[in-house]
Length: 570
Image 1 (cartoon, rainbow, N blue to C red):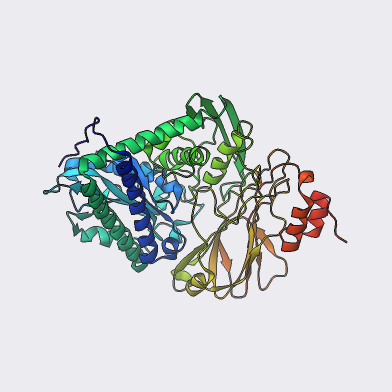
Image 2 (cartoon, rainbow, N blue to C red):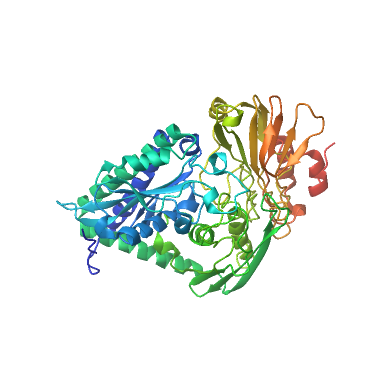
């Protein structure tokens, strides 16, 4: 087996180059659509908690699907492939091999995120390696102390479930039955999980075959040279756009409310350094590794955070590849909450990520006043209803909070959307949720007055209310009270989120934010209110007609219109 590069002097005409570039993106998009249609769990088929990517022969990203979760493809698929090359070497990876990896020491994310990939070979003997097709998908349950691994209480990674550190699922096209049995034996929902694995596997194999077809159509050497040129041009484009940002050192800081167990704020502090055509993110002053599961490793944490913020700033339209991020540098000492040790707990690794992305953008607000928006709601605002066997038939359903994004220099903020780390993840339809969990959704509406006032108003959160039909437990993750979604240039803060629970046998409601194993009984009511985005510009400069429109549509109350904008109604 070999991985011969195309000659660097090989010419690829511009039309062929563009056809190959868009062909790679369309293959990834097609596989993404197929996974949506074929996966068993709503977490994948509806919520789209996965990502599809293609790497080169060294395991570096060359193309990605345009949907799915950006935090995955920012680095995790490449990390897994590069680890496989270290473990096996290219000579021990064959046509038909399929490899799994979710090891915390490799990807630095919670163990539910499992990368599956397969090598792409061409030639009569299938002996020329041209890359890898990879999919990272969220597996619904892989054991551990908590149903679905959603917990604040773990103190090391070994409490959080099954680790598969570069393990073959198939060898030369033949399934390895022992690995399937190990996986099924470590899940509370094996049938659903094996269905998702089948969808993920089919996506890898079909993506591989479509890539081979594309390479053969235009010639393997031309295909490989085209991918090199695509990466080179992405780097050039990134460098050119960094040059439009004034050189300087910029900083921002904020907090996570707590770790879900101890009520102690967790500081998030960073610097962004712009010099010529490079951008450096300095995480030296970030909080140290946490005792609870809010940690992530370097690749799944700091590197992915910086890459996502960089993508928002530099190049929002083009499909990402390794070249996009070559001008991005990191200062990230080990042992931070986003560069934790391999054995650190990571069940809630995603909690610091949206706020930290937001802070990178906030740091650059003085340099880019027309491009940086107000803060977004930046909290996962998750609601997980679940139960183990002690309460009856086990189940778990994950419902997520979509909230408001910050206003811009020219427009009101959008929303409700998911956070900056989620991209195109969606609300799981209520009808699907109600068939799988013992609740009824009584209400879903926009949250009036949640957007931060300003010349341009922050986006709104939503209100969703549930009636519980049988005993179960609640896990929730609502943050950003110590660092509310900030306004910019005179704009005001958005309103943070909260959860209110009305117990059937208790008159007083209880407000919760981060909770685990909270008991719910038949007749209890749970209400999630998600946060709004920050405003932009002084509220006094808002057009009166826009305030009147907001009141008429129910976005802003009459009381808030008078208080925040000085607009009264008779």
